[in-house]
Amino acid sequence: MKLNLTDLGWNDFFEQQFAPYREQGWKPARLIRDNKISYGALLEDGANGFDEFEVILSGKVYHEAETDADLPAVGDWVALEVGGENGDNIIRARLDRQTCFSRRASGLSAEEQVIAANVSTVMVVTEAGPDHSPRRMERYFALISRSGAKAVVLINKADLFEDADNQSAAEELRALNPDADVHVISVKRRKNLKALKPYFRRGETVALIGSSGVGKSALVNLILGEDWQWVDEVNEVTGKGRHTTTARELLVLEKGGILIDNPGIKEVQMWTDETTLRERFADIDQLALQCRFQDCKHGTDAGCAIRAAVEAGTLGADRYEGYLKLEDEIAKLRKQRKKRQMTVERRNKRDHKIKARNRVDRDDLQRELKPRAKEHRSHE
Ligand code: GDP
Ligand code: ZN
Image (cartoon, rainbow, N blue to C red):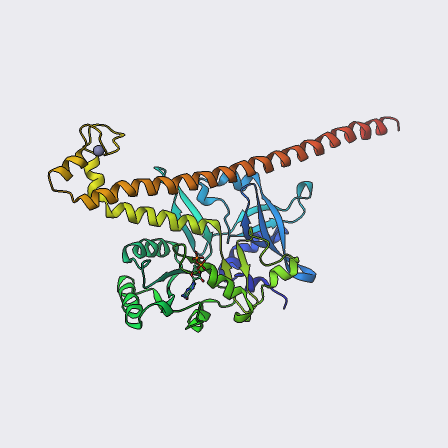
């Protein structure tokens, strides 16, 4: 099957914006990977339908972005100059987004971090067991609602729990958000998977989120696998194995639908967990403001308001212990996040250096060639 723009999510909304760019001879492309310095993009390529190309940002798009959220992200449609300066494929403009799935960056900054653009449906995978948490789901619903995408909840692992429990979990979540579709499924037993089909329509983009261990990977594998009777056409075209490219973040499915599976999804999960956990201890956080020392560990520190509350019996010892553990858990999450961030930054720096060096080589070569060309003319 040969893919076209519509299979990739192109529609009238984007077409209407594109006329001036088409006049420039630029091509529509969809970003499927974010390498920070460069991007991977799917671009129409005569013979093959679509193929993946490395593309870079033009200085103009970079400088005109007022915040990071304005920069192109996975899922964005862009106007691409193919084979521009130095033979690079250059992003000349980012088209307006139909939807934008994002979160506020961690820390004090109010900066928004885009997880994926132009997502039609965000599916939250959970279960009727220990992962079931209406409070956490409220956070997910808030993010999804702000994004403009459709919210779908998959209560997975139905095989492990009583029917009544699956149904009551579903009812509870439906009551929380009447706009959300809630389905009880079992990836393992292939139960009620047909409920997912309507969301994987031609040109529709789906992102999967949820706590770790709920079965997201199992579901992705199923969707990409033969049981689903969907072939990952784009991977076939580029000749890259399905399981070897962890970097690909947007997958086009031949039987219709586009799946987004990127690292940002995991960030959303951690952020949601952290915020939800914190909220549960908001009253204790309030108490902590009254501790004598700002860096009070609430252990044996003098003047600790939290310990004082435990001793006075106004704060239960179990909640106090939960709170202490919470800080550890959050610290651990942050450390992991930081480590990953540093790895990414190191890699980017290295890539950047390589790019800069290549550019210098090219400039040197041009400097060498230019005087000679001049010399040549002066002899005439
Ligand atoms: P992820 O962290 O969300 O990607 O979760 P995984 O896909 O790695 O699944 C975690 C575990 O749950 C694996 O051992 C899966 O085999 C199992 N699992 C996934 N779906 C189901 C299901 O429907 N029923 C049962 N019993 N186990 C499941
Ligand atoms: Zn304290």
